[in-house]
Image 1 (cartoon, rainbow, N blue to C red):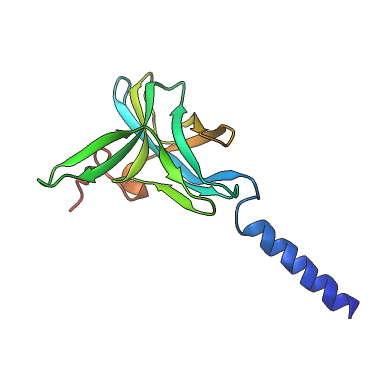
Image 2 (cartoon, one colour; image 1 turned 30 degrees about the vertical axis):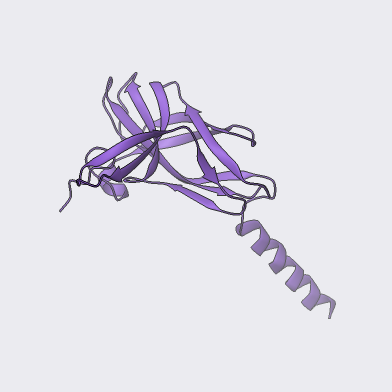
Length: 158
């Protein structure tokens, strides 16, 4: 009987470690940035999960690889033109997820100070309304390999 209890307890601990984010934390996963040329623009993408028990907001980001870093939303206008709009903040409800992805919300890296080549890594710090900053080391990848292509929000694939 003790053996079964130990096995069940170990399984529960393992599952809890693999599942939701740590209580009280916002966690980032699946992060990557698209390649780009010096003086041009790039973008970073990721999944954010809010395990804090309270609603929060992503209010900005910073990086030493760009002159400016902003949160943007790409969406199609009524006349069929893709537009990118700067966002002052983006809500992340308690227990919810915010996916930053091509053609949607993303972190825009404006005025790159150096080339971002596939295989490079950049440092990006996310700023939240309530949660402490999260600093990530993000790999630079080819957008075509990650489900995007062309400029952010502009799908040039057929």
